[in-house]
Image (cartoon, rainbow, N blue to C red; front, side, top):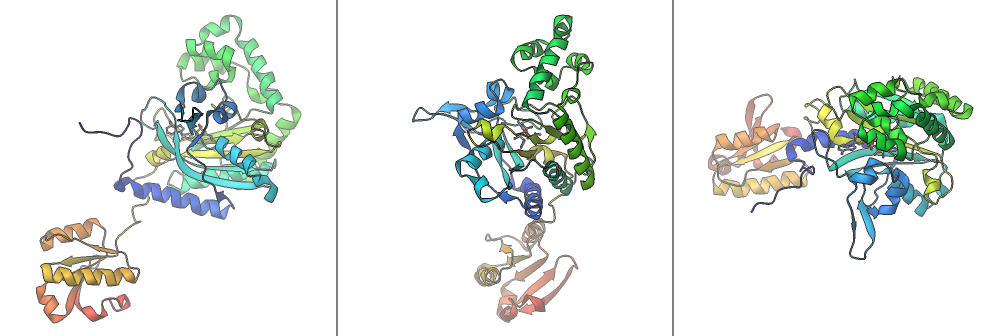
Length: 416
Ligand code: HAM
């Protein structure tokens, strides 16, 4: 019986890779420009890392982690996200000792055992950044504008940025109490069964509910932004002012709470109209207590992650299409000519040219089709007649012209 890839864990085929490379290259260029360095953490971590950071009562920890006992009976999980592993690495290697503000980025796969649908996978990829060590509102603005630049560079100029502020841990606790009071009595009966469970376990999660009746009911509920302490409220104003200086447009969305518990302070999410129900392309925010909670020193930090599959679903088809074109395609007709052509191919490759040839005996027409598909700008044709004369036919695929060139001069491409 044939074995297929696991559901929700698709292959990414060569035809799609151009778009992926475009996004990755654009991100790497922008990260470099903004002073972010790459970090690569393992795919597998101790399960406790995610339980303690993302939160025991979140959907990710409750239902979505690929967790198992390894052969040493250790509880391990495939990483569902990148922030907690990076916070762990920051503490473990004392990264904050060398530099006041540590600015890191990552590109790689994450794993969540969700029900697969368009834009929701079990293995998906994120481009993310985490900046640790500064409480400056300019850092929040830098993180957000950097994320928006990557998204825009991938052709999504009309992505929508929503921001909100959850306040410090104390503000979050106050608001949870306020919300509990507001939802007690009759109000709770207007919510779905899941939300009623959330009421006891993790009340902020009710704002993530997709149920229309719940959404309606929650619209009249208190807003977290109205319960911020003076310090958090003032700081949020500074973040908005700094963000305006970057030129990034945003809307204030008072019901944005995020599905991970580690956030405190400003949070944000980016959505795009080309996506269906899974319309969040990217998200992030401040997590001032996470490093302390994981056993490090109190360290202000913030970051974002872009979901690559969703980014590329919403991106125009043309992105990355120019990339990876073959410069030269060598066509041989007959076994003698193929021998010479293979030598020429290698001489060109040794010169750093991007070129290939078809190794099997095929007609000129079919080899030309192959060259076309590879996007070759030039084609070198070698048959027995050319071989005898010591030449090859050089065809310019764009100009649709051809001429003979000597095989001795074939590497002097400036003569072409
Ligand atoms: P998140 O909102 O869980 O945040 O994920 C960020 C993005 O990853 C989402 O907006 C979405 O585009 C993509 N994503 C999440 N789950 C899936 C899935 N099952 N299939 C496809 N794409 C998905 C985080 O992961 C935080 N670590 C972000 C962050 C970084 N906060 C601070 N620093």
